[in-house]
Image 1 (cartoon, rainbow, N blue to C red):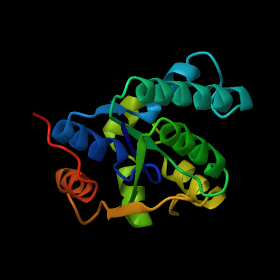
Image 2: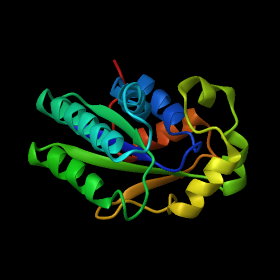
Image 3: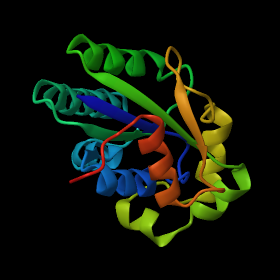
Length: 179
């Protein structure tokens, strides 16, 4: 089982690239906002119980994918420091079942993030879509770093199209093309 762990700041293109990669490989896509929407239907966003349940939901989904040997693409906003333990737990979970985690860091410059954050598709998903909120998040957390304890393929999404980024990921990690 392979877990393609796509991470980066909000509006960098994680879902768009992950969709292209899923089309190319046939890997299942676990978009992080699914867990946020489900938990947020009952609990207020950002509260301790909200984040606790989001973490459990994500971990259980990945655990089941590992146990069923289902190649999966997972997207996440990664904050260096606060999210290190969670990422380590996910990596250990996958590797304990002889799976492999392939980290993919998406990035672009701040001006591009600020431009993209206002797109209609972000509003439709209930994603962060405010320039002020994004700037606050970027001040509060370091969202441009590489995950701790693992190598990452790093892709600038302002240079490559989503399709090109997906093909680069597939080539780098020698992922099979969907039959």
